[in-house]
Length: 326
Ligand code: XMP
Image (cartoon, rainbow, N blue to C red; front, side, top):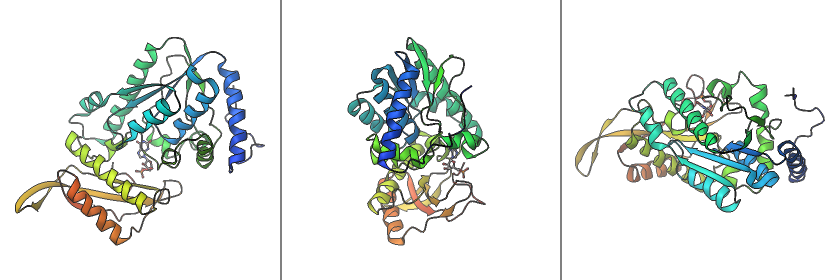
């Protein structure tokens, strides 16, 4: 069996030169493993799967088919970016599935957080499997497993894992970055020419905005999460906070409060801003967002996001709050 221990002789990839060396070795060994076979990859657009895709495109080009499943819970602009980078710029074989209706249909009326996670995970595997079965002659399944996924089997990611990819299809696994730490994956991604917004992307949970639209998801509230999140990200980027704050996002809970708009009473949702810093996601501190920035974000959310009449800032560290609201 292939070892799951990082070779002791492996130098920490901390510079473009070291990344270049890693890339040429990885490309060579991928070519050796894959030969003239075909490979599939679930490409989320996160840094790990994007780096695996870019390595495979370099190694075997069109023998790779990427499948991007849009579960309808992605952030604003994400599916478009995956298509632009991989299909348009890297000329990859990319199957884009908009499964929004299917996922939201399954999630209708479901308010329990763990149940929501299970549904999203199971449905994701089903959609991916259906697409994989349509392709002929696929022998390899590529995955963006990284070293912390292997060594921290009791860690956050394992605990939150919404499910693995299909095992019963009998694919051979192809895991070219399984000995890399996250910072190394980013250095390699940069060297492969991936855009900064992909390489330095903040962590994003598998169930996506689904855990930030608390309780039973509705399309209207999901849109409020997506739009407010886009405003927050835009303002953080403009203020130079992108890549400096570990994770920041908005939550729209499933309750309303009274407000007043154009002289009329309204009954709308609040948007909660969360911005935290952490090393390992096991504990976290709250970012001290400058007040003028908070005010600007608040004003924009209140004027641009439909159905929202209040903006709150979550000041709770972890513990005792978790980073996500569900
Ligand atoms: P919590 O909320 O437990 O989150 O403090 C810690 C980190 O884990 C992420 N997270 C998830 N990641 N699937 C994932 O892939 C999930 O279901 C999930 N839930 C939370 C969260 O965004 C934070 O970075």
